Image (tube, rainbow, N blue to C red; front, side, top):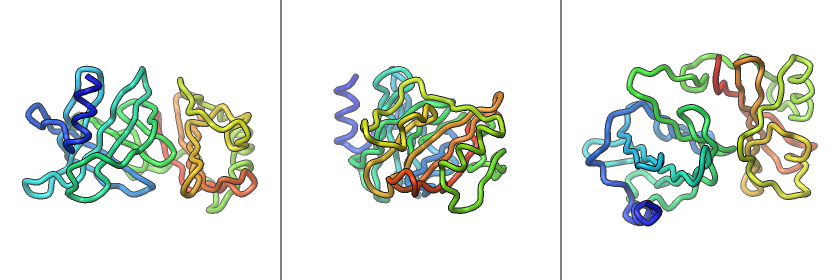
Length: 216
């Protein structure tokens, strides 16, 4: 199976012979690349591909390669019409119909299935902060309001001296490159929210987005 997936990355896409219609979302660095109808191709081990066409040709596609329970590696083509999934999305964690980290999210629902994401449905998250709020301050406020950290089953490894992760069980992922995004998930009752921050310095970490993940 791993050989099949590896070859599919080189060829650009898994055969769409067994593809079925789905409702998909692909977000990369805050940009919605696919949002709506797509083709969904599943593999026996839980890995899958989503793709969106322009006319008869595939314009965008992404692949989620499952390595173990609720953990996967993501790839996408990165350029409209490119036939190779040579852009690495990094390690992804599963949550419902979505696989995500601090910078990317790949989701696939059955047609007509209700999306449970505020960023997709237009709903408002159950908590909000003014633009530019330092995450450390937002974190204190969340705890006062009764929110609790929602740790992933398999946290992404952070560097031992990375204060953005240390003592923060809600950490799902932190990037040491680019804009230094981190993804944190909080729970209150059955509601889950994810918070994305920017900056590699703990004292400068600012909340850039809040999205409802479940129960909103």
